[in-house]
Length: 246
Image 1 (cartoon, helix red, strand yellow):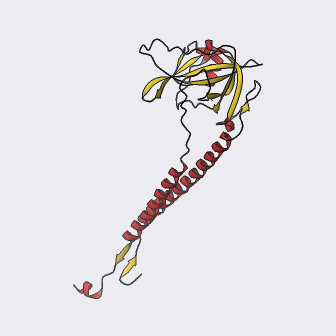
Image 2 (cartoon, helix red, strand yellow):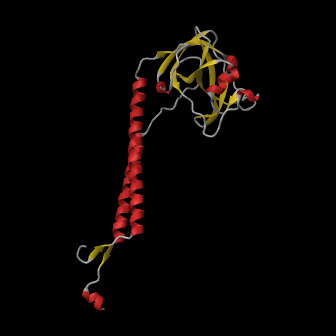
Image 3 (cartoon, one colour):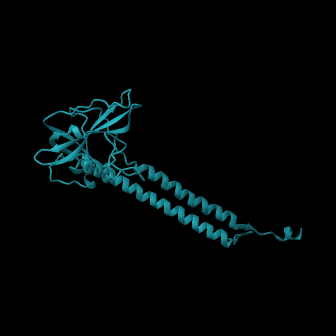
């Protein structure tokens, strides 16, 4: 009690306040943890990009922890197994990403090379010409792990159906089973400066950790506002003797 004012919170109002303030505070700290994760990821990407390129061999198996790492691989392109990823945009134009398997030199292991973007022709039924060089080639690029769309999966290899040369997304396991080859579990995004490819304007991966700091501030602000509203609704003014007499 302070002067003519008294703090008289209701039980239901107090329960609602505790739930909301607790929820908003928890979400604020969660956003701070996300910001820390994204900041660590950005530092990891910068570290991997600054490392010397790794040489990809037939027996080497790189996991997701090697994403964004620069690599070099030598081998022979398998143009007969080349596919086109649909719906890829560049400067507002629709086209494909050209995916060509490379048989790694000295082995029977393959790795998929994303050779870049090529524009779709006027006739959808006719795929654009995307010839690959013959003989031993050296490819430089960056490791990437394609993610499948949520709730969408490739058809079973045993179903007898296939996507042909046009694929809606890249499923590595399905590609390996369809073509009965041993495949590295990643894709190499070919360097823009490499020869024998197409438009390779790969988007820079930006974790945007600062965004989560802004979200955290908003959630903490909601918690403070909720507490302020609670105090405002819980404080009542007592009537003085003159007002009671009236």
